[in-house]
Length: 131
Image (tube, rainbow, N blue to C red; front, side, top):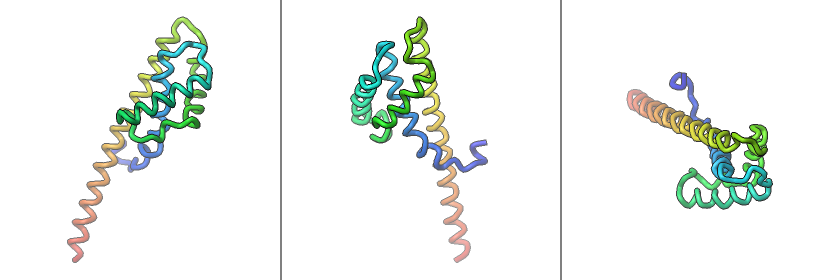
């Protein structure tokens, strides 16, 4: 299905959100169950700057207080901020899901690049035929 569509913008438009969510999930995995919003955001900002320096995220865009607020709401909706016997396992699974989504984005981005190159080659070939 992806090959039949032109998903050129999906990676560029959505990756920043999922990288921010993954970053917060990385911090959350080892955080206390009752971590406060401000502390979680501060930790995520620090780890985010580290990830930018290490090239673990594609840009500095995911390292954003605003995106971390949204990410925190997502983890709250997943009940990942309330103490529970299986909290560590659910937090780890949440992070694994986000990593899988980012791998899927990599796959879509590769398809998009291949489609773009094929169209460019075709367009240049058609331009030469018309001369």
